[in-house]
Image (tube, rainbow, N blue to C red; front, side):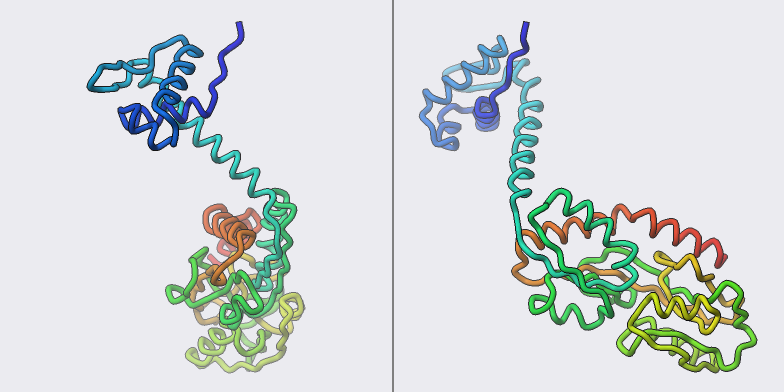
Length: 301
């Protein structure tokens, strides 16, 4: 014997009648005649071989069977709506311009883009990496979305994650006795450059700017060779470097907030990507970032 199927249109009529406790009011909400709504309920009752309502001239109340069905009906209708919406979303197309820091552009964002674009093949993402301090000001003009770094507790946009700034050096570089201390940093406008200089000056630690580059890979390579120390995020700490702490004579550094910025009048494609990045980065940090953070913290402590 085959199981009866549940028509979403019949279930919708049932839920509206149950909520309104009236066939007349339900008919108005469904933009149908009262007789048409009554016929839908009778068809559903015949399909399930139960009575869903206790009808009197004054009231329409759920029967015991109706009470049992109501929760299932709401869930079925919600899943139906979600499925239809997801199928419609897959047809959304457009170009989304994303600005992001170098390290996030290397370690964090690419796998998130891969999973996103697998579900939305008609959306194209153009990603630019670099210093993000000036990117939010160019939202709408050059970028649709920007993942930027701000001082902890002071960033605008949607908070995603807090990152600790960490001093880093080559595996065998001895930094305690180096005077002045060679540092490899990013150009002016980089928050980590500002923090590094302020921390060293406050600690009265002599230093010299040994290397400057927009390239994350170049700065890390110079540090890995023992030519200078640099500053990186704990969550994307490079495996070829070792973290430094106050035991190495290095002053403490602040933490940074990673925030998502959206352009005004964001397209549907941009909104979908923004929600995906926000959820993925803030609630489900990727294993690359987690493992690097654990390793760096373990080595510091």
